[in-house]
Length: 199
Length: 199
DNA sequence: GTCTATATGGCGATAGAC
DNA sequence: GTCTATCGCCATATAGAC
Image (cartoon, rainbow over all chains, first blue to last red; front, side, top):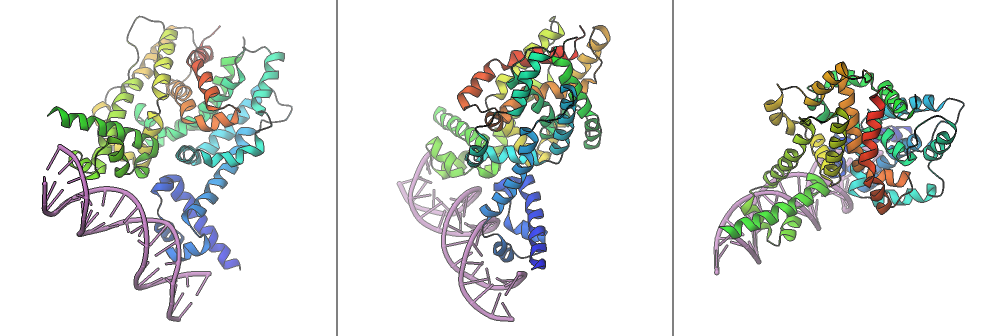
């Protein structure tokens, strides 16, 4: 029935907000029910348990994240343009706050990833293989592509994750920090490109 | 009495491990008491409440971290050498796992930082002021020092925080990842220096 | 100072009426 | 499908003996 599926959407949206901001251990089923406008009993009617509901939210977040980090634009653009595209996509994803959620929960329970890994374990990391070839054909510094992968992702992800402390360290309020971030994707890409490009 | 202070140390060490790995919400007073080899009642005798004990642990971690990010070597070394020193210090701190703890708890309760900020709010960020002058006198690219601060810290901090996912993305086991990290501080510094230095 | 036993409250989950 | 009421458990904290 359509009505029940509407309720389900409300629950999932409320649960996502709660789990993302408070984490699994900090989230209360009562709070989710309140935000969804239903009783705690109804909440359990739709999703049998807290674990069950959490798993759904976590998997959705992971499904959004994995393609972002495991694909690498397969088009005719230059490697510089690919880097720019990547930083732009990654930074806009990160800014919505799902990234810290993933890190927190994966650290709470590392096994949570094991099952999903098996599907992909055989294929190589596309970023690494791409930069292996780029390093052979183009005029760039030789840096282990594993490091390049780590550095590029760090530059993109960490500013959102460490927002609270960066703000204070740089004496900015939330609004000023957000404004600073508006120009960040371009700066991050330039930075990365300059670091490995030979003049 | 000396014995009581010995017990206190055991409690603090146990509490540190528990809070750092499980977070505030995931930590159990019983577990801390067990690890310290005392009863739950004794634990409460030393530190009245969980909040109280947590605050002590959190402040200790912050006291270790703040100097690391807010000082900037005041010596005769070149800016390149200062960068190398910073990456080395920061990365060795980060690898011990306190950083994710700080981020997690600050996000759980951002007000936790407010009180401590007031002491330092008036002084400028030393990294930013330093690179402001470096950009005027040396032959480096003009990049907003706020971005430089964010990028350098991101490169240093994130590889430890996102360890679980980087491992899997790069198809490395824990040992291989740790080995990769052994050479990381040097690579990170070189990367940063190349990115802003003009040829 | 240290313990056992217990008070107190909160949370996930369910029973059962409507 | 949705609710109120309640069960059962677990966690923090305290009482009170030693």
